Amino acid sequence: MAATIALAEAKANFSSVVRRVDESGAEFIVTVRNRPCAMIVPLPKPAPKQLKAAGALAGRIPRVARSREKASYLEALEAKYVDVP
Image (cartoon, rainbow, N blue to C red):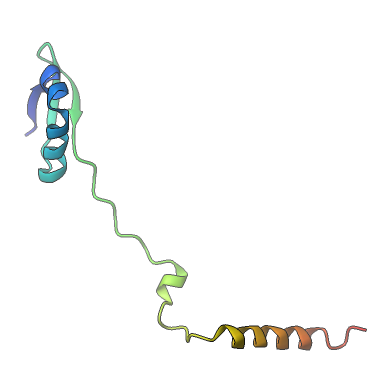
């Protein structure tokens, strides 16, 4: 159950309240004149990131030297435009 804390106390000790929420997952109900008005709760933990296509293929694609990559590109261009006058 969430602990109740007065607005003045929450304001005076805000950094320690936030630290407790972050570290222990504590929840606080902030009251104004003994009336609940707000709640301080921890954010949900983010889901692990999904691998993108490049991340999923990391380590599976053979590394090619930059010079070989350029040579392959030039060969492909020459093959494509061999018949162009």
